Amino acid sequence: MTAQDQTPAAPPIEVSLVICTMNEADSIAPVIAEAQGALGDLTHEIIVVDDSPDERTADVVRGLAAQDPRIRLVRREGVRGLASACIAGWDAAQGEIIGVMDGDGQHEAGLLGPMVAALRADRADLVIASRFVHDRDIGLTGFRRALSIFGVALSRIVIGAATTDPLAGFFLLRREWFAEVRPRLSGVGFKILVDVLAGGKRTPKVAEVATKLRPRIAGASKLDLRIMVELAAQLIETRSGRLIPSRFVMFAGVGLTGVVVHTSILGTLDALNAPFWAAQASAISVAMVSNFALNNLLTFRDLRLTGRAWWRGLAGFALACSSGALISELVAVGLTHLHAHRLVAGVMGAVVASLWNYWSASRAAWGVAPKGRDAALGEAVRTAAEPQAVKPPANISA
Image: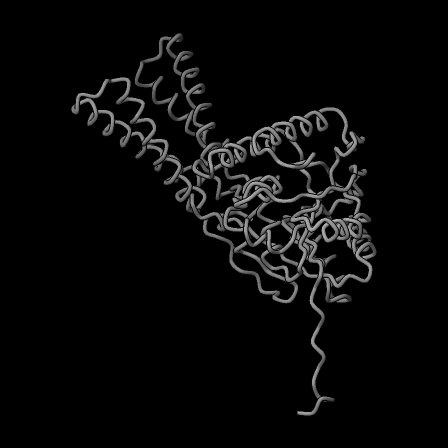
């Protein structure tokens, strides 16, 4: 082979930008165009990770990718969640610098150039587009503003982050830092930066640029109380050194609401002079359905069941929790025979049962192992280059 026959090697990719989308068909094209304009002469790739329930957003990206090979699509089926979408995109990225931004137009994509420059000039591990530099207007109002400020304050207290905005959704990081924190990324929830900041063996060096959120091009806000619940659970996991998984925190919290539901139903039926066995059976049934529904909405939001899968999941959840009740009874009785205090025996039985319920219900209802962090990171994906869809996990409704 002569030198003339050799194909020049492609230059290394400097920046891989992941854009996570959920029903962003009307905004994704201008967002990509703005991002590519801001990246200028930097060699880059744009990876769109789409969790939309339909193909509208993906079809727009496929059309753009057909014209520009620097644009790539990761289409996930049966999984949801911004954090897991980020990780799925970063795992597919090839750049020396990787980052993330939203696909609704709220982030100032024009800051990408200054962010890359800041990352390099300060030899930082991360550069964050912060809404709170110099107390700027953050671009939120009313209830969403209050939620965001509260979440930021709580996160800074818990993780001691060296940033003014640990809940930012627009940031860049070096590949070396991603490799260090990757094994400790939970993939749960919507606030991936908390894990990125707290997942290393050392405190990362952080640079910031000032920003504020712009009006979105299309779509609706995804910030709500459910995201704050996920954030609180994520912070508990972080503060416990990953000993207490965030999913288990939410699962246990839902279990406490089930106690309230059970007590309320039992008290009401008792006041109506219903037979105790009937009142107890009704209270157990209603509490179990309530627990399943809330876990489906909160704990396993990224794997949420709908339609027939919801009813199959409920049956699996009921079976798993029924066995947990038997285990609780056996543990408590066994401890009393070992001369443990009755209250201690009862509490230990409840603890063991809650751990069993979490493990067994996760598998029986949602088809995932509790410790399988990567189960929701996009195992069921297809890309523009690989049009054949992988079958979604069992018992998961897309």
